Image (cartoon, rainbow, N blue to C red; front, side):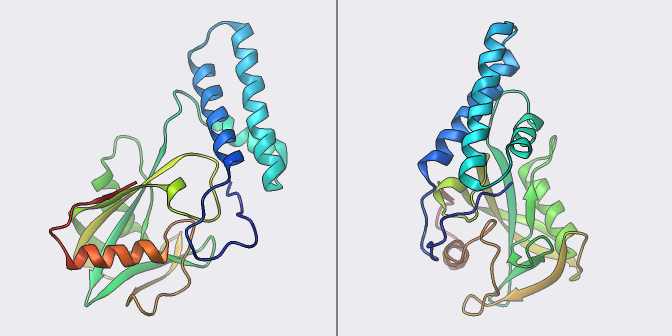
Length: 220
């Protein structure tokens, strides 16, 4: 459930509002407490904290309370960041992007990592599923905290974004159930980006890392 940023934001890096960080932290405290606590009195307190977090997010985002509560209660266990993996593929000075059906905008292929799947395995799978290209991992490019990267709209959970440089080994461009466009684009002529997933600033950085393979991976 994305949370839209203020209407006056621009392409500059935008810092998430404090209320979102507070609501996210309260939700994590409640989720972890409900996982470990067996005392009914304590569980009631954690449920109250969970509801407060949901009310904060619903009130500030314009969503109804019930869907937010359902979203929170879908996750159980110790609260940890979610992991989004993306494959960065270059060919002839251009970057591979896919067009997302959900918003009609473009991003490097990728998505949530699955359980029992290494990040590198998840990237290879996602690139193939969303673009039709078979790839191999070359190196880690970046591990970013989504909250510090200015992605819009905001997201109710804490997310780490992992980007791998990949090399095409086979396959051909093909759309999928999640994408309806596949193409390679030069850095000076990018299509409209899905800013929830990628930013022009990040793509520019990946081109820099491509031209300077001796540089270490980015983080945070």
